[in-house]
Each structure stands twice: as structure tokens, then as C-alpha cells.
Amino acid sequence: MKSTLIKKGFVCFEDGIRQADIYIKNGKISSINSQTNADEKIDADGFYVLPGFIDIHTHLDDTIGK
Image (tube, rainbow, N blue to C red; front, side, top):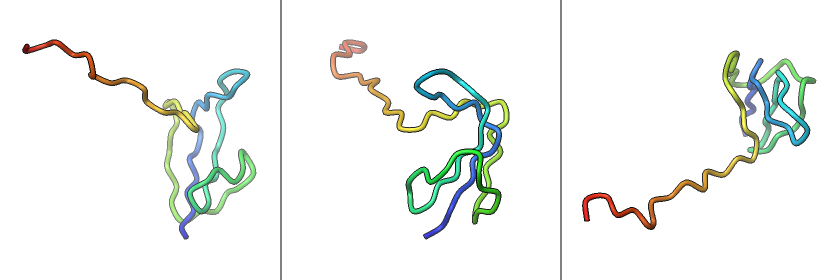
């Protein structure tokens, strides 16, 4: 399975936000700030990286257009 390295993103940790590199292998975060080789590299410089984030935004009670 392929590996991905997300570089230089502002990562939202439980205790704050820090710039870090995230290495993902087999669909799971494998390490932080310790890998340099990956099948795919994503430059996230200037972007927020939200590991485990689930978007709870829905329109179940939306009344627009009714």
C-alpha cells in the first residue's frame, strides 16, 4: 500500500497547533516528524492539517427554499 508524507502543515494537536510533517502508511498516521521518504508528498505549508477531523456540518433542518 502506498505511503504519503504531508509536509510543513499546521497540525492541530490536542494541546495546540504546531507545524509538523505527518507520515501516513496503510491509511493510518504512522509517525510525526520522523520520515522523509514516501510514495506521495503533499506540501501543506500554510495550510491546517486536521488528523481525525470529522465534519459534523449537516443540513438536516435546512428550511431554505421551503
